Length: 273
Image 1: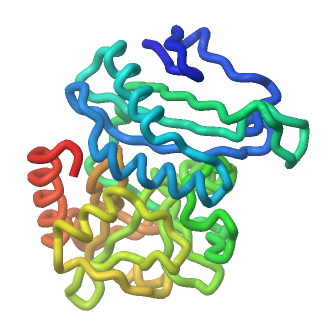
Image 2 (image 1 turned 60 degrees about the horizontal axis):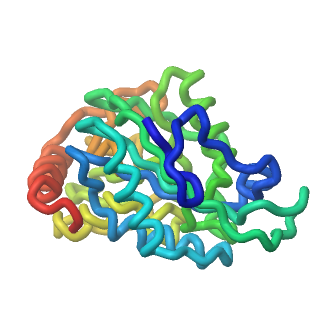
């Protein structure tokens, strides 16, 4: 495998950035992860749009044409039917502190085998809330330590994903996924105001499954639902089997099954929707 680093394709074991890179020193960077099927990146345009939005939120300029070219160059040099592709843009080399340097950004495009997800997911609530008022809310930044801790805690408790409520006790999202659930017979998902990330798969489900609604709900709604699922760029639609160790009645239920079917059909028909 090879990795694209600042304009050069290098072997994975030679892919390095400066020890003074601001992404390494203070987590000053943005990223995107997307799936690649038979050499084609799925929903690349939407991922690049979100990368640019996240960059603007941090004051980092994103050259979308350069990133797109780097993705194509990388995929032209790797093999694999199902890959995970990660684009990372950081503030570049700088001082050992919060102030940025003047060297310019660092851009890395890397690939790895697609993760294998289970047929269903066991989730637990994170003991820590998502701060819906953070300046990083809605941005996909490399400052992921909160997610690392929450997911580590979930795995220690026998689950595969942690669910965040926000600071006012409303449902928000997972560490690397958006959340959908049945509520009073409807399929709903937390609104952007909850502090969740604007997931690409989430956006496509809202477009392709018109009955989905955005609805602010208290965290306990997830424990009382009949069915729920996680959505992300590498897992697509994954039914939730249990919440905090308690089984949900249906996994998958009819709302989840329909969402999964529609997403599979539409995503197979159009690689860059």
